[in-house]
Length: 475
Image 1 (tube, rainbow, N blue to C red):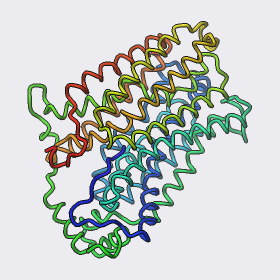
Image 2 (image 1 turned 45 degrees about the vertical axis):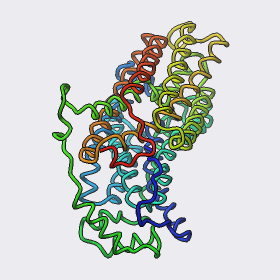
Image 3 (image 1 turned 180 degrees about the vertical axis):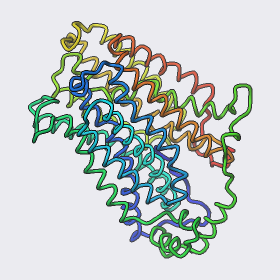
Image 4 (image 1 turned 90 degrees about the vertical axis):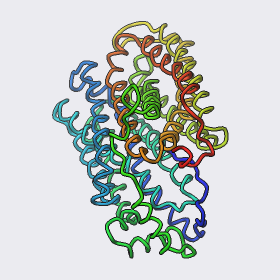
C-alpha cells in the first residue's frame, strides 16, 4: 500500500520544520491501521496447528477458519470509503479499532470452531476498513511536498506488524515451553497469541483521538474553520490556508464519481486497463506469498522443525520482508515499476521451483515428516529468497501501479474492482493451501511458481511504465 513520491504541486511549499514532527506523528498514528493489518493477518500463523488439534478439524475446515478473515476484509474495504464520507475518517479508524479489539478477545476465548470463524470475520472487517482509510487519510493530511514519503509509512507499518506478531508469538511459545497448547494463566498459548492483539488495537483507538480530522472531510461537511486550522497545523503558517481550502473545495466539486458502469467496454466486459489492474492484483496473490505468513510455522513443523525453531524461521522471514520493502521504496522511483516487477517475477519463480524440488525429498506422513539436512537448508534459503524478491517488487509495485495506471475518470471505481480481486485471490490461496499441502507440497509450489513465471510475459506485454508521469498523463 505504498505511494510513490510526487513532486510538489505548483505553489506548494515545504512544511516548516516545526510542523514536520507533528505531521510525522499524525501519519504514524494513522499508519497504526497498517500495523494492525499486518499483525492480525499474520498472528494466526502461530495458532494454526493448535487450532486444528483443539477443535479436531480437517484441513478444509482449517482453511475456512483462516481465510474467512479475508472475506471480512473484502466487505470492510468495500464499505469503508462510503462510511468515511458520512462520519469522517477518524470515526472509521475508531470503528476499525473496536472491531480489532472485540475480534482479539473473541478469538482468544472461542467456544468452538464456528465462533472462532465468526470472530475472524469481524477482525477482517476491521482489517479491510483500516487498509482503505489509512492511506486515504494520510494522502489527505500530508503536505504535497512530503506526501509520497509519508504515504510509504502504511506499507512499512504492515511489514513491521507482520514481524512483531511473529516475535510476540515466539515469546509466548517459549513461555509455554514450546507447546502451542501449553497452559499460561489458565489459557492455552495459542489463545494468548490471538488475544494479545487487543493491545495494539486499543492503542490505535487511543491514537485516533489525538489526531485531527481530514481537512477534505471537514470541508465536505461545511466545517471550513476547523479545516483551515488543521491545514495550518500540517502545512505551516507560510501556506495561504484560505487558498488551500478553496483549492480542495474546487477539486471536490470537479471530481467525477466513477461507477461500475464506467468500467465496462471492449470485448471482454471491462475496459482493457481495468483487466490489467485485475491481473496485477491476482498475480500478486497467486504466487502464494500469504502461504508464507499464514502457514509458515505449520510448514516448517511439517518438515521436522520443532515449534520454537519454526517460529524463529517465521520471524526471520518477516525481517527479510521488511528489508525487501525498504529496497523497493528506495528503487521504485529510480529504476521504475516495470523493471522491478520483472526482476521480482523471475526471482520468485526460481525460488518457488527450488522449494518444490526441496520438498520432493520429504519423507514420512502426518506429524512425523522430515527433509534431509541439505534439502531442508535449501528450502529455508529459497523461502527467504522468495519473500525478498516479492517484497522488493510485487509487494510494493502493484500498489504503486494501481494508483497510477487508471485514468482519472475511472480511478476510484477501478481501484475498488482491483482491490476486490486481490482479496478474493488472497482468499482462494489461503483457503486451498491446507488441502493442497496435504495433497502435495511439491505440487503446490510448482503451481505458485508457474503463476510467477506467467506474470513475466504479462508484465512485459501489457504493463506500461508509469515512472515520471503525472496522473493526468495516464488519463
